[in-house]
Length: 246
Image 1 (cartoon, rainbow, N blue to C red):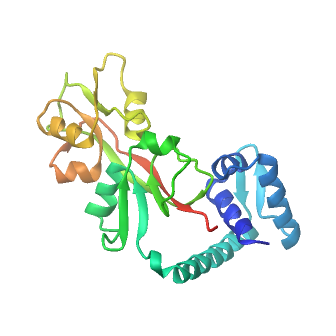
Image 2 (image 1 turned 30 degrees about the horizontal axis):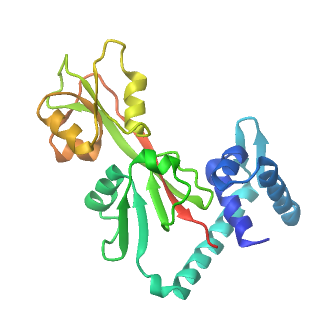
Image 3 (image 1 turned 135 degrees about the horizontal axis):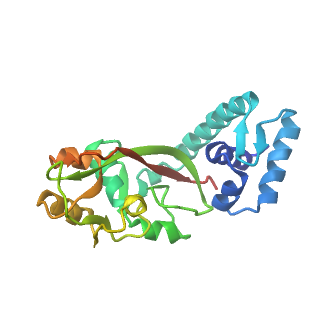
């Protein structure tokens, strides 16, 4: 059993899918299946129940995940101690998530992290990322990274008033943006769609009463907007990816 096996197992445990694990880590499905089987043979337990719906962890799988997390955390700490000269963590992050996690929630220390903001489309297509962490809601599939955490943005359709009608639905021009996809998926055929190339532009237009948009709750509150009547809130997922230990 190697560190890479624990890392691969954690990806399977998080994604609940051999297929998605293989895609994210850059392996064939048969290779992932074989390495899982080797782990189960070594431990002499079943770690997952396999079905057409994916992987369901067994009690042994949950216990092994806790062990893997402990070992990988200790390995990361040791790695950091041995590389103290690289004390600043480089984080690549989507624009909206930077505003939420760094500016609003203060989850990261600007003195200890260096941030590069990239569009979702860029992150969804890159395979040459070098940052220690990537935080995005895009479909990020660089095999050098594994999922470390998942979070959610609460979102609602909002406007300057609760009963605006006849105004265009504003969507981000970034085609990998999940807010754009969710908006277009539920828009009626007669709805006028207007693309805007930045979140600042979308918020400014909504505040001016020139349109409505699906917005995260933190932006709605910060800009004193209101949820549109008759619309439901929803959750937009995002992920934190960590570069694999070499």
